[in-house]
Image (cartoon, rainbow, N blue to C red; front, side):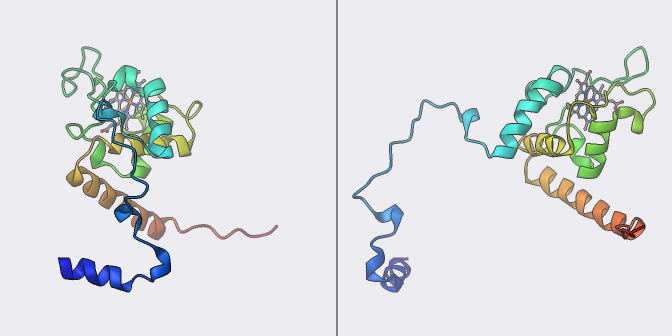
Length: 170
Ligand code: HEC
């Protein structure tokens, strides 16, 4: 280890000075340990997704994506309660394309009884993608990689079945 560090330093040109993390002349500010872990800084897309999720989705799917109680049991009217979007639900079983279609067009795209509203009037495709980026923060590596695989598979199938149309000038 010492050899590797020594080699790394030897390879740096002297004019560069010490690497930032070894530079003690300007120590970084101490970490504020009073911050709750939930308040980790988020990238722009996740922060946007959280804002829209809190505004449009949390009332049914839960403030922490936990869904409604007994979400697997049909209600008296035959509809299903709102499922969780965290790892305990099945949102991660579906590709991005399917999820964005459900968000924009509503749950009736797959179940005529569904009470999942259509958000096409309130949420853009980019915002729906941001909501998904936020929802993914509730998933572990297994759910993330499974859902990424579904998205890849769907993209491949779509390219084969529906090739990008060539625009012909009239
Ligand atoms: C009025 C309540 C309500 C609101 C608000 C709502 N949903 Fe839903 N959502 C539901 C219900 C109920 C279902 C389950 C419908 C079914 O399976 O028949 C559902 C299902 C879904 C599904 C399918 C999940 C799966 O695993 O198949 C997705 C994705 C979804 N909602 C995303 C969203 C997003 C994103 C928002 C906010 C933009 C949102 N929902 C807002 C009630 C709601």
